[in-house]
View (cartoon, rainbow, N blue to C red):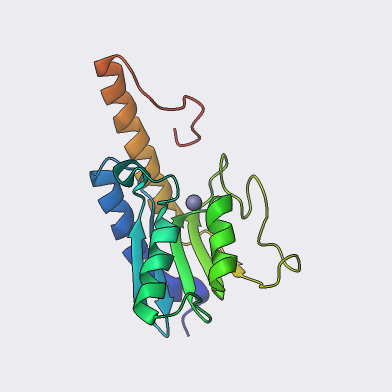
Length: 171
Ligand code: ZN
């Protein structure tokens, strides 16, 4: 029998593919997919810069995509896969969407609101409980972030400005 991590791997791979698309567009490379009954029903990648929308995080866009496709603003029984630990907005979105489970890759020490900066989804505090699995393909997700920020910094130095937070935890 496959253990949990093996079962999650193909979907996290799809989320990593979304992350790659974000990176190619110059956005922080985070990707997400929503899975229901073993099928991907929603996809999203980070687009706040391109959309000029501070809420255009991968998770929010994937949940919107899934909700539209399912014709339901709630997604009971769904699993949200995201390459990086969600921020506080996206952890909240998981509760609002009533997803059954959140599966994430790498932790985000500076902005993660599930196990790092805060633990918003720990049991018993909301009207809906979201099960959490972390660390799936974490190395790939982390490497993608580190590579992105490293490249951006190099380019920033060349042009005389980085525009990036020097305290970023992504190396
Ligand atoms: Zn977010």
